[in-house]
Image (cartoon, rainbow, N blue to C red; front, side, top):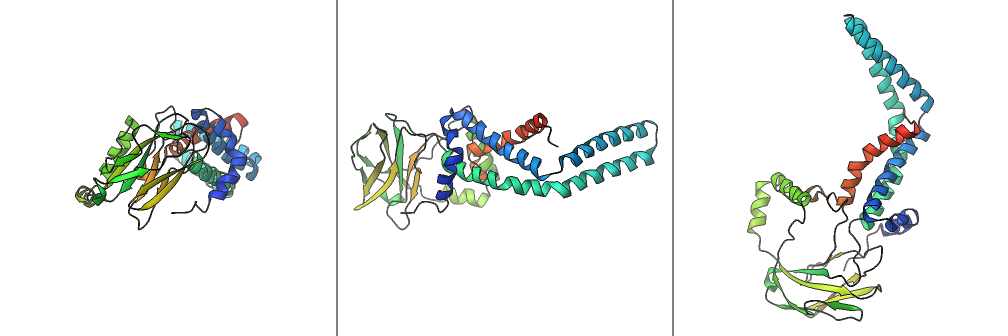
Length: 301
């Protein structure tokens, strides 16, 4: 059984800084993370650059742009090219002097937010008295055999504790965004990998629908082929337990608590073929407009 990720202590420490975001409504949580990422860049830009110099550079570029326009109108090509050359030099000088410094200063908070979001924002936490799918993946040879989920106080199932292993059925896309992402992934997949996927035997799968009647931590224990496999589960909290566990060199390959991905407006999803989860796609969409908005509000060049 794999241990917790080595960076889990970073996530736990970051809860002191960002944990309050989990108390916001689902969509506001994602917007709040995007605002914090944009604010990190804007603050870094403010304190690592010479704003007075940059403001003068903006004024000079505007004046030179106006002079270039006037030169082109009167047909003075040489003057227009000279003004354009000076504008380019000012831009390159500003980039060389300040862009790298601002990027490095914003990198640490952005990386901390990304690590925290990867553990806290992938899924919507399960609720009490709400059925959640528990899915175990087994080898193809296990199809037709039986697997047992051990009863535990505070937990129930809607379809029986003992279930038969059936052929694996991939989870169908739940919205247009996911269908688009799956189609793009198929387009960019190489012909060889498509043929290998089609020829491979489908693994076995066994499913339970688990209901938690309290908010206490539970350990879901699956018994198969004389061995016990477990995964932690907890409902009714603002954080979720890690939903997947892999088992190497074991008759049972993995256990997954199938949680709902956290999406903006329950629509914007991720891109699995790029390994971009929904919350990170939302941030990438919102961060650039938010940076521009914050720079305009606080007059930061």
